[in-house]
Image (tube, rainbow, N blue to C red; front, side, top):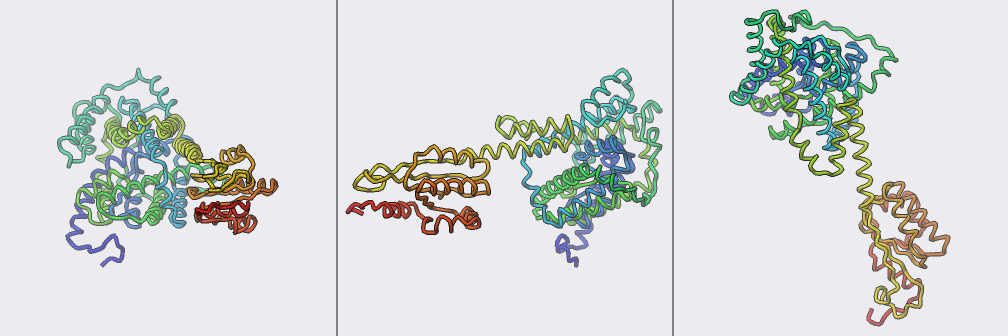
Amino acid sequence: MFKDGRFHAYTIQSFHKDVMAGIVVGVVALPLALAFAIASGVRPEYGLYTTIIAGFIISLLGGSKYQIGGPTGAFVPLLLGIVVTHGYESLLIAGFMAGAILICMGIFKLGNLIHYMPRPVTIGFTTGIAVIIFSGQIASFLGLHQLKKESTFLLQMKELINNLIYVNPYSVITAIICLITILITTKWFPKLPGALVGLILSTLVATLFFPGKVATIGTVYGGIPNEWPTFSFPTFTLEKGIELFIPAVAIAMLGGIESLLSALVADNMGNTKHHSNRELIGQGIANMVTPLFGGIPATGAIARTATNIKNGAQSPISGIIHSLFVLLVLLALAPLASQIPLSSMAPVLMFVAWNMSERNEFVHILKSKSGDAAVLLLTFTLTVLTDLTFGVLGGIGLSVILFVIKMSKALIIQPQATSDPTALKVKSSSHPYVHVVHVEGPLFFGSAKRFMSSIQDLPDRQTLVLCMNHVPYLDATGEAIFAKLAEKCHKQGNTLLISGLNDQPRQVLERAGWMRKIGSAHFFSQLDDALRFAEQQANIPQRAAR
């Protein structure tokens, strides 16, 4: 009996189901591993190494019962940018550093924080990544395999346009055959792996009808070695670590977000509950080990995880089986994979990009014409035109600004002068006034200035009653503004009374010493109590009816 809760009530029948699910996922993962590696600017076999090693470790040590790990489309633009700018060995170092960051995130229990990523930001960068992947495959679709790799979208499009005269019609025919096969298989035979069927059929057509007319994995990369990858530790220096720190953080953040989103999808489909921090640690270990064998960064793959569950997976064993299946294919059939045309790989990634684009959700948020739409567009635009890091930071930054503005507007200040005898129930209005100010909403750095300007606009009174029943939060800036108000009342000889403090604002004022400075007798749980105290201090005679 396994002690791991993910293997609860595991039986021989469960193992049989895991084997079948693992083989199916392995078949699906094969073409994707090759395609993602090539699209990331590295040799195709590195995608297979990643699937084998990272997939095995993520299933074994992760926090999700059904998670399938490996190279994913979300990483493609980020990894390609690193390879183009810094080189392949630097990608290995950045991946290793990202793994260490993920482990630290798990140890310090930061797994749940990723769930607070604004939805428009997630949709924005996901759709942006999909656009980059799709557009990046146009050259391969047209047979333009010798184009210079560019790290930005605009430069890549410029390079493509400048070389359109060199389009290879045989590559276009091959790509169209693969694309049509994928579409037909997905629609009419959903249980078959459309990508693999498309690759096989288009490869056969190209080999039989126009041999040597299209570039293949073998002609461009020299074939795929059918052997276990060798261990090698990349050369690391302090300067290289500093140079790659930001890319490593970007890999870690994207990997953490995607893996936890994938784990959530698995929870919903499989009626389970993953362990976020354990998942991050498992992902981190996988990404520290994989680069030592030439593999690229990996994360949880939503589509492959869903396929795993749909095919009857019972435990993480299915993920382990999927990795072993890919290893067997590498050792036994690698020479055959070398015959796959590169133009056949393009439709595979285009189809992946289309499915991951979140286009319906993108349009839905865009139609809202709200601040969320602005965040979405900014994240999407920066992701496509610059890179993922700027896209996410820009989207989060705008989200914070809009949140501050929204919360500052949520502060409602309602002054109420009690000069009307019926308000304080006094017999005469000849006594000094008492002024009541109702405050609703959080009193923080975004709303503090508005609060103080409203208070300053009020006429001086002998007694000011601040009603804070509906103030849920008070930060350091709000406390400082409160301090200015108290000092102003003290200088003018006015009395400040506070009613209805909630727990959090009370704790802030207590720690700052204002309960003592103002006097605990000036704090009341109810507004009526504060008004009665004000009457007594002013010696206002009360009506007999009271």
